[in-house]
Length: 497
Ligand SMILES: Cc1cc2nc3c(=O)[nH]c(=O)nc-3n(C[C@H](O)[C@H](O)[C@H](O)COP(=O)(O)OP(=O)(O)OC[C@H]3O[C@@H](n4cnc5c(N)ncnc54)[C@H](O)[C@@H]3O)c2cc1C
Image 1 (cartoon, rainbow, N blue to C red):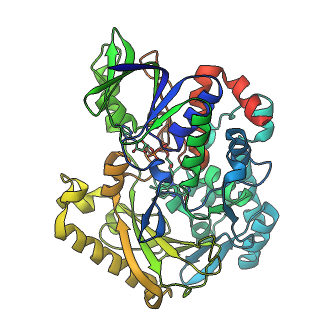
Image 2 (cartoon, rainbow, N blue to C red):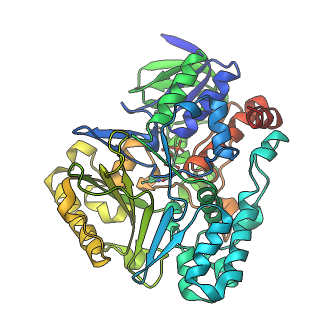
Image 3 (cartoon, helix red, strand yellow):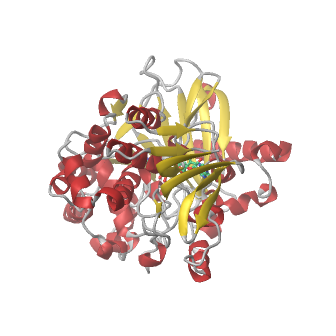
């Protein structure tokens, strides 16, 4: 049996669902297919003994009224349904470097003043750094949307090294490290990371940083409500095992190897490597293109340790804490393998008990190479040796925290953890990478994947195309949908929503 849709969207990550919401609102008959039981990809929240554990969203930026993500969420019709907590204005991020704490404050005047108190000689340099962040951040915005522009081009900043630009602004090595201190947010590597990515992400948080209360999963669930309200279909436990190509056009997909669904267009929210692996062989996709996409390097993955706290034991902190136990805040793969030198700590409090942390998530970089013993296994086949590895890693991480003056020991009720293998197997990201394809500042064009594919009716979306994260993925979803309804039309519609 086959059903006919206008557009099939593969994957219910943020990118897939946002495309589904936009295009169903525009009158297309869409069908979103998700392989997992839970929707949302990295936005999914799972539950353990009643505690909500977020998988890939700890805070989100540009959410104040009048800012771009806020405007998009208004357009999607989900803003008023979301439960959010604005983070501490004076210190939404705390960077601990060489045993001293430094704070990132919200709003540029306060951001500059706060850091200048710690580095009085460097006020001017901090001011120039803030100007550079804004130069990138202002390439997007509600005013641009109103004028029909989704995003202005920022290729020069993609070609600029983040570490290099910071070093040009200040010779103070401590300040250099402090300004790069939240690089874990984008898989920061001194020799690779571009200032565009660094600035787009930092700017969005300085503008307006928020945490989801009771889990980030509320975003996918609300987007699904929007899609269904506009006649669209959203299905879980529906893995696309083949993208069907006939006469150099996509005809639809095969679900779980047996159910054929037909459509006029397909949008893939999968990693581009997975899209190519799933696609029927065809003349339009040359071997050289497939090789290029498969050769692209991806960011490191993340080991996440979830600490479920004893009830009403640990006061909630409305900020994130970045700990650095090395001379350099930039992650070094050679030195980093098997040891912990950097991590990010993020607390969650529930809507019913806002004074106390219910869960503490601790994130630290990890490459899949560390997990080579289990690389050919599926989640339920990894056995006791994998559990023992995760326990050792958790102990090592807690030991590192203690050395940095953070001891959660007395508050812990339960511990859970996930590794890059979890992400590889649940969201299908290449090698368990956290943020997808690296846009290396040396030649960012090599890492760009277009929203259009080599087939006329197959499109890409998601974090691998441009910048990852809630904001980056949303902008890419707009660019993907612009292929259907026109960029100027869509931008104005969202800008004036
Ligand atoms: C540990 C971690 C922490 C992060 N923290 C933050 C943060 O605090 N703030 C922030 O803004 N960003 C953060 N990010 C990044 C952000 O979560 C992602 O960039 C974003 O959610 C990716 O969305 P996506 O739609 O591109 O992909 P995904 O979320 O990966 O979605 C892809 C979807 O496709 C589905 N799929 C794959 N193959 C198939 C198939 N064959 N058939 C059907 N479905 C399929 C997957 O199951 C998945 O649901 C974090 C990421 C990680 C990993």
